[in-house]
Length: 395
Image (cartoon, rainbow, N blue to C red; front, top):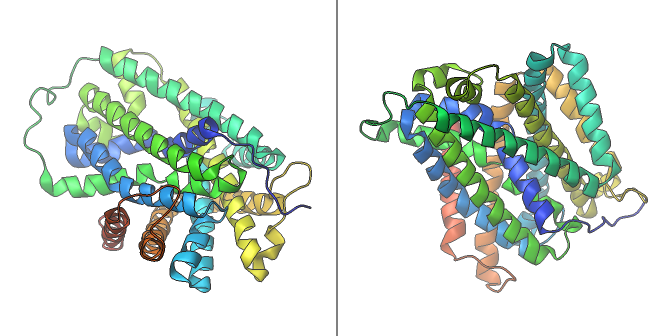
């Protein structure tokens, strides 16, 4: 075994990885939930959510340039706040969030594929999970290339939805949407914010990125900009084509766009949504294994995970453990419970990461990539506000 990961990732693959994990399967189901709150104002909610996510994403970008390590969040808290125990907690929290999120997406994606193929749920879930773990073990470049192919499939599906939405006759509310629902916009923005979770995974690939101080920040900003544009445009054509009540009641809102604009079966969209889910699962498994690898460097109790396979150059033990827990959890727990737990854990980590950057910028203002000092403060406030909404039962 070796203790060094192979640097095989450039800007295009890392950006594609980020877009794939952010978009994932979320856009295929989340539009309906947001539309149920603010109706045809849904695109504005997604735009606001992108703006809310931006400060934390920019904080991650600067920290990835300062500290390009696999267990990103743990290293940030360690160096920023000087609290080893809290740093290990942050790292393990990201592992838990990634594992739970992957389980939720695997369960949801398997459901899409069962609907499209008629295959039995549990055996299909296990087979898909095992296949994705095998890809993750073989190599990071192979994993990234496979994820890039799945991302392309996701985007083709969304392109077909856009085509169908443009063909559809506008709904009755489209010409006169009514006043902006200020009371509901906050809730809708929080709901939409969860669609942008995923950029934090990108920093944990830093030890396998060529020139990480330059590449990782650029990839994070590109991925967030592209996904924000995708969400706004897709939600725009969706609420234009399908009545809000129908969107809110459906677990396949984008399929309704196809049926309204073009007609015929939308089974192929279920297949694409399932493939999008597999992309999200692979990205989370790859990320969580790298965090365990990084944690093993500084925490003796996790040292067993700080080894890479001499041939594949991947953290095999962490990958197998994370993959096994993902499959078992996906079989045991419902999607809603898994997704809710993921959001709360990640928001706590976002708050710690922004606080760490505030402390680092005070001690050492210079960095290879810098953001204004107000950025981490904005990220801290928005993370705490969203966390308060989550604990308050609003989200």
